[in-house]
Length: 121
Image 1 (tube, rainbow, N blue to C red):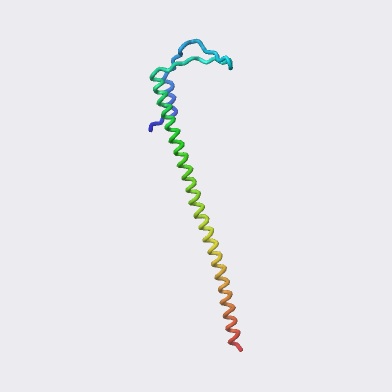
Image 2: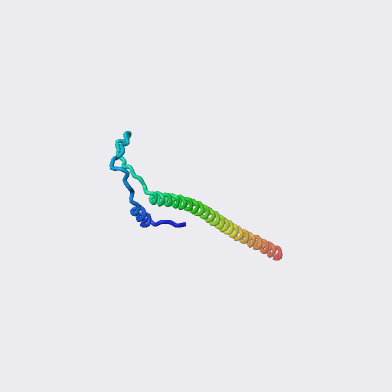
C-alpha cells in the first residue's frame, strides 16, 4: 500500500492546476461571502480520487493498528497484573511460612523444656 509524504502530496497539489471556470463569483445570499467556481480536469479528478481512496485505506489501516495497539496494551496489563498478584501471593506465603516456622520452633522449645523438667526430679 503506497502512502504519500507531506512533500509528495504538496507536489501533487501544486502540479495539478485548478482551472477557474469563469471569472464571475457566485454569491451565497445567506452568508454574503463569494466563492469562485472551480472545475477539475480529468487528470486532476483521477488524482484526487486516488488520493481519497488512498486516504480511506490509510484511515482503515490506522484504525486497525489502533485496535491492535489497544489489544496489545490490554494483554500487557493482564500479563503484568497476573505476575504482580502471583508475586504478592508468593510473598504472603513466604511470610506465613516464616511465622509458622517460628511457632514450630517455639513449640519444640516448650516440648524440650517440658521433657527436661520431667527428667530432673
